[in-house]
Every structure is written in C-alpha cells, then in structure tokens.
Image (tube, rainbow, N blue to C red; front, side):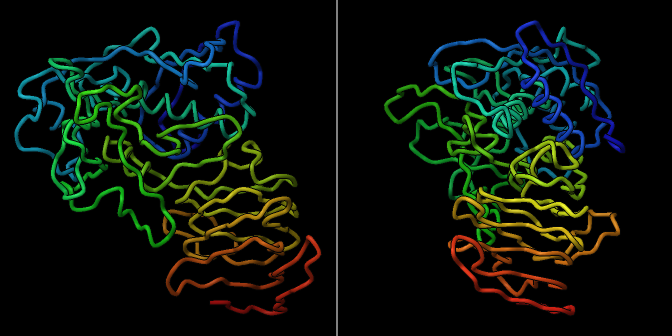
Length: 392
C-alpha cells in the first residue's frame, strides 16, 4: 500500500486455494493500509483439514528471548508499564519479525510466521478468512502474544504487560484469582470494558486459561474471550477491527494511519475486495460509497462516518434487519486527506426494521439529497431534503 513501509513476503504451499490466497492478500492489504512501520514480514501459508479441533486457524513462529528492561525501552514511550519486571527475571518471548521492527534483533525466520487454515470448518472465503489471517499475523508476525509464564517457569510475552482487572490493577494470574482481565495501555486508568461504550464499542476481556481450581481452558491468553477479530472467529462472520484492537497494536509500537475506505462497486457491503483497502471498513474509518455504485448492507457494523456521492446509493437492511452506526455522522476524521464530500450527496435507504444510528451525543448527519426511512419490504416512508440539510 502506498505510504506504508509494512510489506509481506509470502510463500504459498500447494494446498492453498485461489480463494484462500485472495483472502490472504486482502488481509495483508488491510494491515498495510493501517500501519506504516518499515518492516518486511516473511509469511508462509497452508490449508489442511484438521478436523473438529476447535482451532479455526493456527500458526507457528520463531521468537527472540529478551530481558524485560530491553523490551520496555523498545516499546512506545506513551505506554505505562511496570517499573519492575513482573516476571521476576524470566525470558520475554518476542516474535522475530516484531523484534526486527522494534530494533531488538536482525534475525529473520524461515519463515517468521507460518499460518494454516483448518478447512474442516465452513468458510465463506470472505471477511471471515481475512479476519482469521489478520488474527494470526498480528500474533506471530506483529507481536500480539502473551505467555504469563505458562504453567510455571515458562516465557512471558509483550501482551502480558497490558493485563488489568476491573479495579485497574495489574493481574498476571491468568484467571487463577477468578477475576476478569482487560486490556489497558495507560496503567489501568482506561480498560477495554470502557472503550467509549457510549458509541457501541464492545466490551473486550482477555481469555483466562485457568480458573480458581487450576483447571485449564484451551485458547490463547492474548485473545479476547468474545467474538472479535482478536477473539474467536468463525465461518461466515463479517467482523471488523475495533478501536480497542487498534489501540492494542499501537501499544505494541505499530504506527497507525487511517485511510478512508471507498466502495465504488455495486454489490454487497460485505464483499471485502470492493473496498479500497481490500476489506470492509473498520470502526475507526470513514466509509464512502461513490462512483454511482449501489451497495447493500446486511450486517451490523460501526464506522467512524458514512457518506455517499451523487448518484450513489446505500441500502441498509436489504435482506435482514441491520444497524449501521456512524459514530461521527458524516464528518471526515482528521486522519483523512481526501477531498470528497463529507455528506449524503447520494441516496441512503433505511429499510423497514433497520436503523442508521448517528453517534450517541449531538453528532450531525449532513444530508444533501435523499435519506429514505422505512423503505423496502413494503415500507414507503421517506425523508427527503432537496438542499443541504442537517438531521440531528
């Protein structure tokens, strides 16, 4: 992606279908559009029927052992991190590609990260597989891993530094104290259960691998316990990265650059490759329908803002009751450098049973053409403005 230093050097084995390869490229395009760090990550990919193991995708990767003091010094200065080593002197495992990005090592794995898609499960080879690939690359390629010492004297890892209980205190017990744990990069002042919930952002908590009786529950302790891109993913879902997940990557040292996501192709919103970034717009992005395209949306999504250009149309709830939440109405965010209009210059139709939600406060929806309310499925209601109007 232009303007990004992040690149991927891919190896696909003979098992990889063309549909899987297309999803891999879309996933990497999304990551390249979001993060600008100069680093090449060597990835290899395969597909295999691994049966009903509960593992949708898996990966393996090389890692570099580092001291806590060195790792802490390499992480962003804005992170609030423990003054003393919470591991008590254990090794800190840093995936090798991530270590290169942080300047800790020049070592290159062969590959850095290897990802396998379990074909036992029913994939649509759309956003579901894209999300799964992003999930795995963010771990073995980009450092989003935890350890908490394993079952005893094992390694620790970067995500362990951002784990807090509901009281805002560090919690490294991996569930043995019975407490739910959340992400925070500012020392527990702001938790992932309070990441602007007023705008519809989900509560996200870490998966605890143990309970108070020391029973073990499979799953990565760096993942969310909820359905999310960094949590559980499955066939047919159309999740997108949340603001919290972007916060996680920034806490790990990845530099974020939000580009407007533009769809100029008639069809479904849920067709990832129709969007300019190669994937559906994420929570923090502006979404624009342009080029005279008619786009239908049938899954609940949150975006930063929504806009259309003249002659373009967005239909919300074409086949299923759907809510589109545009947190800041039609305003373009400060990261956007485009010159396109920030209003509804085309046509947005909200079908019966569906909703267009504009923020939670006093955000505005700049409507310069047609906002149809209660259209479709027998509905006939319409709200129309023939000149620039604002609907609050």
